[in-house]
Length: 172
Image (cartoon, rainbow, N blue to C red; front, side):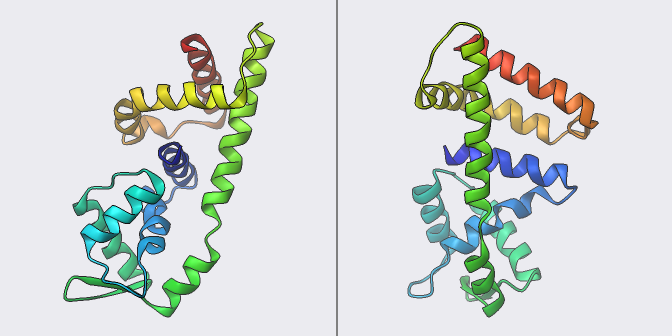
C-alpha cells in the first residue's frame, strides 16, 4: 500500500506546484539512523523494507543532494548524517498519516460507488483490487505524471477522478 501512498504524495506535490522529488525526502530522512552507517545502499534497503518502495540508488543520491541543500543532512565519505534541522523535520513528519487518511477516504468512496452499483465488497477487498490495478498500471501512471498534461484544471481533474473510479469499478 505504501507504493500507493507514494503516488498520492507525488500527485499532491504536483497539485501544489512543488518539485515532486521532494515528496520522497521524508522517506529518505526517516531511513537515516544515528546509530549505524548510512550509505545510499543501506538507506535504499531500509526504505524498501519499511515502505515497500524500491527507489533506485541514483534517486537516493538525488534525494540526498536535495536534502543537503535544505540543510537536513550532511555527507562525509559517502555516509549520510541528519543535521539538527533534519532531526526536527523527521519528528514533524505527519505526511504519511495524512496520506493514509486520504487513501482511506478514497477507498471508502470507491466502496460506496461499487455498492451503489449493486456489488458488496469489504474495504480490504476494494483496497486489494485497487492496489493490483495500480501495480499493473504504475508505469503508465509515472509516464503520465511526468507530462505537462498532468497540469489540469480543477474541473477536468474531477472528471478524471470520476473516470478513474469508474475504470477501477469495471476492473473489479
